[in-house]
Amino acid sequence: MTVRTRSAVAALAIGVLAMTSACAEGNQGAPAASGDTPGATAPTAAYKPPTITVGTADDSKGPAIAPEGAVKGGTVTMLDRDDFSHFDPAQIYINTEANFNRLIGRALTGYKRITAGDFKLVGDLATDTGTPSDGGKTWTFTLKDGVKWQDGTPITSEDVKWSMERTFASFITQGPTYVQQWLTDVDYKKAYQGPYDGKSLDSIETPDDKTIVYKFKTPHADASYAFAMAGYGIVPKAKDTKEKYDKEPFSSGPYIIKSHLVDKSIDLERNPNWDPATDPIRGAYPDKWHMEFGQEALQINDRLIADSGADQTAMTFYASVPPERLQQVLGDSSLASRRLNSPSPYGNYYYFNLDRMKDPKVRQAINFAWPSKQIQQTLGGPAAAALPTTILNENTTVGYQSYDLFNKVAKPDGDIEKAKELLASSSNPTPTVVYAYNQTPVQEQVTVVIKNALEKAGIKVVAKPLDRKTYYDSIGKVQNEFDLYWGGWGADWPSGSTVLPIIFGPVSDGAPNYSHLKDPAITAEMDKITAMTDIDAANAAWMALDKKIQETITPLVVAENKIATTLHGSKVGGAEIDPQQWIVQPDTIFVKP
Image (cartoon, rainbow, N blue to C red; front, top):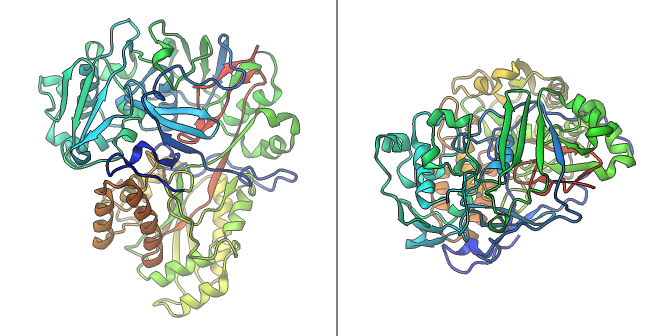
């Protein structure tokens, strides 16, 4: 996809971009199908990655563009398994929490839906997506007239500054860290400890009640994307209760929390001081939201399939159709109008532990022998998983370019002969690989498929099951005893800058560089691309580096890309899976009359 540029730091102003996902570690063992789905068509067969253009000041005006048939009124019931752990925006870095936050919180920028699959980055609280200067080091935003808190007091630039400063406080342990580091240092909490002792950040200026100026240490052409993250939502200085704010937030969005029974239910009602004329993103069509927690995916989907009584106005944010029901749901034409499908925007990988798997020929042999098609069938076939060939996800990468180094498209069952050829010329023609996996029913089946395929090539596989609750803790240890293991990561905005420097970044316990890649040349290249102010050049460079890493080092096997299938009640309109969050978003939901 081509991006037109106007100037170096203004390149984002008119570019066409692929949509991104919320940053998170992947969810190995998440609901997927088992067995084939006869008669079902793979939902990705004609799938077109969504796009986003950077909007103008006019695009940033409200109200939101209504989906076809949208009406106001009624109550929507949302059904899911888990309550939300955080309401404080500074603590939000998980897609489910970010999705809920759209109902009660706002940020400087955000994503406006134009039509299904077509989005614009626009000003949310700000009049536009910001004005860069000083080569991209300085970004200036102006707040809209009429934006208010739930008590009717105006949202000011001081609130916005305070919201960023409090992310440095010691009690904030979750949430994104990009902007904090851009403003201060990599060790940002050492550089500044937050505003509660009376000290403020000189790198954020508020010349008046409506103007906020951020001064970064280095250029950041994509800053307007970072400010769209839920983790950079705003908190009123006058109502900040520090740790307690995480349980009792103050709304800037279209709804307020009327009641919250932890792990049981949340009820929302309209915020009378939210003005749709200021909001280009949120439609806020239902009068009320009722959210129920504590049910598993099977229970939820059985209620949605039955579609009786109050469940006709019910939906789910993330309870995908489970294996027990996927064949039924995909094969039932009467459910077609209530069924949503979307491939994951995450990157999923089987990482090699480079401290143990030292010979690149062995790593390449495993890639050639990899049973992609068999794994796909185990997960439920093309309707449940796609088979990517690149590190960067097609749906989350600007200027995406495909490549297929290991011939997976032509030989999705694996090229055993090529694998044997590579092993014969390697330092260990008959290697033993310790494969650690998340002990779920699905991954037990996948492990058998992987073991059988690799052993055909002459690679002995020792399978090590890991407890699902501590899976990431186990593979996250630098001194682990495994050679190969699964891991996932999602981009924070449409750029390789939030993927490759993370999964191939610093090596330490708990860090997401699970391959332990430590290559000075690759690190230098990533630093060089990050500093680019020409976004076109940077996007092309990230994609080229993706291929270079696999071609010269081969630190991982690109895994399957799961596909979400969700249902909603027959009287729920406007339901769409947000390609950024991979979750059903609330902005366009309405109750049909």
